[in-house]
Image (cartoon, rainbow, N blue to C red; front, side, top):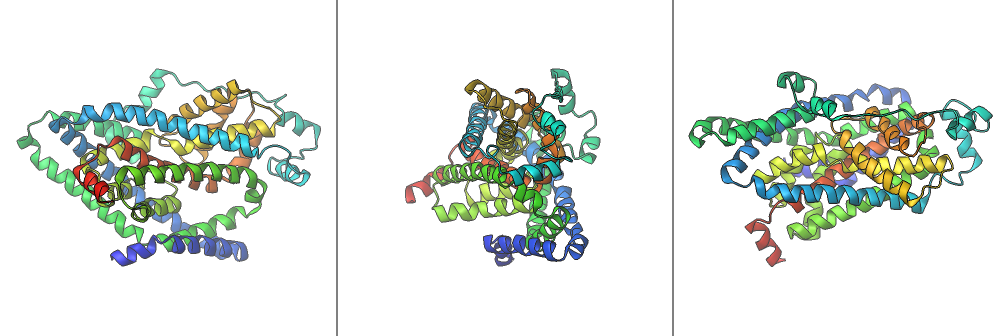
Length: 431
């Protein structure tokens, strides 16, 4: 089983599955569409396990931290790391877009393709006016404290579980775990064992499902290419390249942080992150990756399970590094596309707005995440409506990059928050 699992998560097998599926979607779009459902079935199987796992793992971790008196020591580190990581990825995204400038000096054929995708000719007067923002007003986005709290607090935990509302389930798990922390160990002993068994059972089931990654990737990529073709990716290739460059830089920093923090050899560190990396590509869902992130952090990187099982769900839900870098990149690209040269003050405003939009994206996927770009564009007075279809067409690729940054970036953040264990100190000295 271990050898099969390593083969399924091999980078070469993953790459071959993606390329093979894309080729099938190009040469035989009909059969490719017929097998696309495999990816959706797989994703729903994974989502079936995520919420029970998070519910049990978070409640158990918070309870143990309260009983052991370790909850307070993590709070200061958590706030500092979350703020620092969000600011860092936002700066990396801005640096990539301002250096590469993918939205400026576009060739006429690219502009013509843009016109086709937005439903008109970019040389036409009305389309130019729309793209320059003379006739389109940015939509207003308002979120008061009351609406935010109503979104966070579940009135019915079973309804939240049915609706796959990760944030509400997380809030319930935290509060219930705090309450359990005040219960005597003898009274909570039976529940402890039950929660531990549920968490371990969910992790085992996820590990079995990981064996199916190569065929799932093949079917998913085939269906996606058959559905959209390669034209949107070619038209938006410069933006995708800039976002990929920013994401690669963030992933490299995250790998360096995990390597230095855990004291393992570089090869062992890369091997420990291989599972979360592959699952992020396959599912494009950071919540689904939580069990394998916990397994990598505890089983391969040697962090304390009690801390990790609390911090991973918190980071995936609240430390939205992927959407943050995406909103920065998308907003600056739209500014360049519309001919706006942002001032340093504008850039700082975009960074702050993108961090807030990233936090607001918790629990969102796909279309909902893309639509929040209108909020960040609105701070610069840019209309996002005309460009919305451009970003929607390439979102499957951007979604992979966002998920990778969330999963690997949050893994690095957890290693920074968790105190070093005796095992880590020993590994560091040996290295």
